[in-house]
Structure formats: structure tokens, C-alpha cells
Image 1 (cartoon, helix red, strand yellow):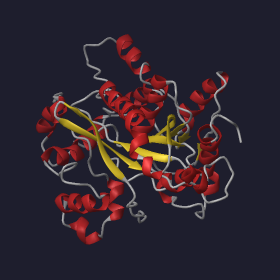
Image 2: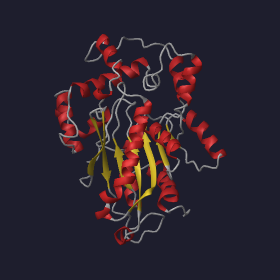
Image 3: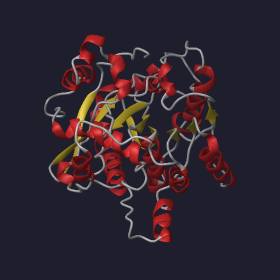
Image 4: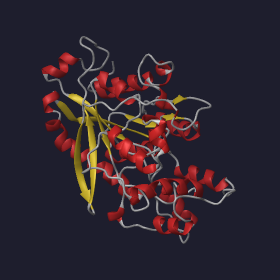
Length: 364
């Protein structure tokens, strides 16, 4: 497992909403601008200090809509965007089963609204921020949410969608074509208890941050061997998060099982969309179509290529990046431009950001 780089100390945490008693947070990772004298479409350090307004990008984390956290970003994101002078805002949202896809999307929309109202003052000591010049991005489930945000907002300059689902109808057909799991699901709770957890639609019970398997690369084998509680305590230190913002409890612990169960039962489409057996096939398909966005960086190119074709017909610039034979989450090996593969898979994203977000509308 590749060692993950430490989280930078230069950030600030903010509560952007409270819904049904559940606080929702976002983290601002400010940029200090690109290297002095650089003119490749990015903002130079001198420009940032002199008051040139910098853009920002909202990032939505992955986790199958039921896990993950917004503290530990993809390893390449800040090394790519900060030298361009782009501030990064990472957002937490509520998880299924207590909330729906629409609820999660609304959380992200509320975060954008909060940023437009408050980000300029938050970043004022670092230089001016143009709150109307923003981009969107996310990985996996977060990539799909970011793409949906782009459709709803109609104002984002750029979208970075990292292996996010873009066609829920096709995704569900793939699930339906798979045979049932050969083995019975097993977790820390019984299947009967899990059925009760999955049926809980009380939004006041929603969780907004959990540990993920890839986070374990930040911990020592000794810590991992001590079990989930020790892992959570260790990751809390790694994430640099306060007790006010996140505490490990039974609901957080159960989200591990929720994600496992969602994967085992192939519920990643039906559960967030609240598709029920009493709905007709037509009703189910229409709802799936209503939440199917677009795709840029993928390991499974089918959905991506279909959507890229449609976007280009509408005059939208699309950058498609595919890496064959790798697993979901493969991109977390990149941490700097010196890494092998950065120029092929990461730098093209930077060029797209430069053209559409960093140049104030001018192609450079």
C-alpha cells in the first residue's frame, strides 16, 4: 500500500450548514499562487499578493455515497491546482441510507452558495478571490455528484470527474446482469440488523465522514492491528480534525458495514435514488436518467466515451484520460510532476483548468 503524503497544515474548517441537527463542514485549502514569474495561464505569486482575484474549485469526495471523508484529498489534487493559483474547497455531505441522492446534491449546492457568500472574506488575508470564477470536481461517487452540480449550477468553468458514474441506467443494467453473490454477506452486525440500518431514513441520524480502506496507508501496521477504534483515532490525528467536527461512534462504525452491504447487494443506484419494488420499470428508469451526468477520467471507458461524444456535439471541450488494467482509485500514486505518469494522466487536467478557470475566460 502506497504511503500517503501528510495533509498540509495550511487550511481552515468551516461549518456551512446544519440540517436536522447534523453539522456539515467544508475545508478550505488556500493557494499561495504559482511560482513567481510563471505565465502559463496560472496566477503568479506576485499577482496573488498584488490583488489579482484567484479562482477556486469545490471537490466532492468518493465513497459509494455512504463512506469517505473530505479531509484527505486525492494525492495529486493540491500539487496540481495550488501552483496554478487555484484555491481548493473540499466538502462533506450526508450519507445514505438516511438521505437520498437529491439530499446529497442539495448539500453540495448549499456548500457552493456558502462559498460564494463567505470565501472572499475567508481568503482575504491570502489575496482576493473571485467567488464567481469556480470549478467543480470529485472522485468516484463524488465525481458523479460534481457532474450533477455542473448541470444544476450552469456556471462552473471546468469539471474534473474522476471515475464517477455518469449513466445510472447503464450502471444498474450492469448490476442486474451480474449473478447473486455466491456467499452470504457478513459484517460486524447481523444481516437482520443491517436491514434495519438500511431502512433508516431519519436524516438526523446521517453520518458525514468515515474511514476508508485507502486511508490505512497513512497509519502504521501496529495501529491498524489494534482494530477499528485505534484506526479511527489514528486517522483523526492524520486528518487534523477537531472533536467538534468528527467523533467515532456506533453510527460511524456501522457505515463500514453499510458500504460493504451496499456493494454486496448492488444497491449503489437503488438506495440513493430510493427506488422501490412497487415502482414500474419506466418510473425507475426515468429517475435514474434524471441523475446521470458526464465523465472525464475513468477506468471503465464505456460511459465516459458515450458522454464525451454528446458533450462535444454541444461544443463542450472534453479531455478524456484512460488507464487500462488498473483498479478503482489507481490515481492516488501521483504526488508531484516528477512522478512517472503525471505528464500523461494528471498534467492534461491542469491544462484544461488553465484554459477555462485560470485565464478569466481567455484561452492560453
